[in-house]
Length: 285
Length: 297
Image 1 (cartoon, rainbow over the protein chains, first blue to last red):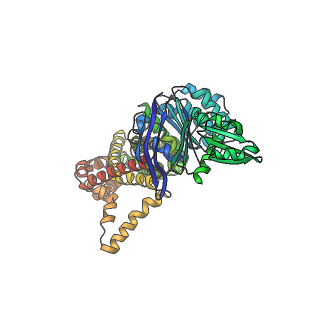
Image 2: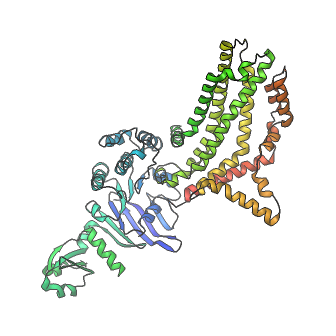
């Protein structure tokens, strides 16, 4: 595993709004990393810095290249889908394939067509005639047919129905991902991707509040459904988050040995969505 | 080469009117001539042999002017829209996800609007103008029993040579206008046409109100009259002579006289031309930088 993205003290302001504040992180190859945060947390700004689409303070390096100065070279190795529905409405499906084939040295036409053959998209349709879900399928077909080392997805499934969203992520895992490739995606619909991710970066108001692999989360965090008579004992161990589920208290602990918690109730590893909500509410408090 | 070709095709996919409209105008005119040609004066007058060339030259000119005017309108719309529409529909995020530099993208758009469409229109005008003369001749021969075809190959070549020179001179002369439209297109958050028109007009008005001078309007106004003075010898006389030549038997041919008036050295020696080209280059650089660094998508 090698480090492919290295961000150091990344900062970005939009007027008085601080979108990113001295953010540093590394991303390794062969991982699926979720950049997770609420709306306006700074996720898209971080991706734009990685893709060389915005000016910023601090440094970013992707595959050893400076995205601002070496964008063209970088775009041969990096693909991205920024939001959905950015394919131009006037473009025809076959022309879109022709164009990407013409400009991208690593595009495999047969692969895109094979992918499209499993959809209802017709070659001569204009993109404006396709449903939103079909536009995303087309975009995915174009991107997956490029043999790129890093795929960056910014809220790729926003506005899609459940079936398209599920298909999108299934395709990503089955047809694209392997040990050589890396996926970096942002979403605020954490439940959708939590079984997919190998690493998470939680972003809140321009700061990274958690940077961890999913395995490390299991070692570091424990969720306890506390038995009614153990409430005080559990609180004495300083849970960082507590909420009631069906009247039963659920607490999250960080860096507490399971042995210390085992008598308090039912233990489990918190889901990424639960951990995210807990972290956001703790940060806000 | 393949890359260049696909990028040019992409521009015509988006702005289909760039080729459809001139072809449609030419086809409509040809159809009108084919159907109603015998009603025109050209078809009804029985020419003398020495009057064929000037009439033929005027036909070719008028024909070309209609197509050039069509193209000029289309090119202006294209240049104003080419860097704005991709931001309006956010497709810029798709284009930027592919390994094509901003410099290349902007230069391709300039090439299409400034070279390919004008030269394409020139070829279209030259060929369909000849076709129109052919149709008129055939109509004259079949329905009115004219003996002389409205055709003279030497005149045709001369007229087209003259027009190609005029086109290149006009392109060089108006290059800053073209790049200014592109700059407005890359700059505007909305209403690029307002951005293209209002700032220079306001600046000129302020200049006049505050300083009482006209430098800005003089700098911005690149009149056709100035161009013809620079690129042609005594163009006013030339035009009059051309009119005379059309009405009189012209031994040397109207087009010959026009070709005599061509004066590239006058144009190339003009500081106005070079200042304009320098401004055009500067605006292209600014346009490229705007597309590269603008972050409002």
